[in-house]
Amino acid sequence: MHKMYDTHSFASSNYINQNITSACHDNNISNHLEFKYNNLNNKVSIHQDDAISFLKKLPSQSVDLIVTDPAYSGMNNKLKLGKGRIVGQYSQKGDKESKWFSEFEDSEENYIEFLSQCKRVLKKSTGHIYIMFDSYSLLTLGSIVRDYFDIKNLITWDKVNIGMGHYYRRRHEYIIFATNNNNRKIKNRKFPDVWRFKRVHNSAYPTQKPVEVFQAMIYASAEENFTVCDPFLGSGSSAIAAIKNSCNFIGCDISNKSIEVASSRISKYIESGKDIMQKNSTSVEENIFWE
Image (cartoon, rainbow, N blue to C red):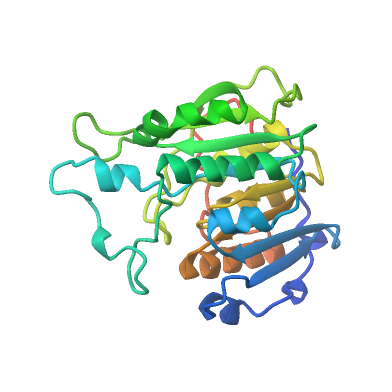
């Protein structure tokens, strides 16, 4: 089982290099925040930027692992079900007071640019990538991943509790696991390709994913001090999972709310070892394979 950290070894929030409030409300998307932990040996860096713009600024072969849940627009914009979006004022997405964030325009052209940048920043010798998909985006975009990476498996995330939907209610999402055309193995050949973690209910951020989903990815594919990247930071679940695995982390999101929520969450976790946005495990499995 993966080791648990002594929270007294974490650095205090005095090591945040920029003021959180100014970064969240400044229109200059180059703003970033840094947090150090594990006696300053590991670093978490988050940037406010568009995903593709952010990736273009990273050095080539600077990342060991990409774990990400893109905010696809296809299901909301193209899959017309009932009266459209079921929850919230989706038409107001991206507005300052809106519940919904701006999404990634998942045209084939845009997705090709995203994947090409992911391939460039991933190290050739160690590079693994996990990309999350809903059922619609998997059918429209999933096959393009094969042109850039060596797909090893399709993982199913079983959310245990049934969700909303038309023509059968949704209970799962998918994760494509691939390598940057290398043969580096995951940590254990016994890991399953169906992961059962409950969805996060009543979350403070839309589509917040369980930390355990990202822990499974990172624990399987990373070693201590690896650099993990998430170009769609959201609520910061991937950053918390990276910290739990003693990895360096770099991520971005274009949303002011994401940067504000994630930075507060990361800071408090480093200070106390407590996750303010997910207090309990979402696992229903007896066999713990993700830590």
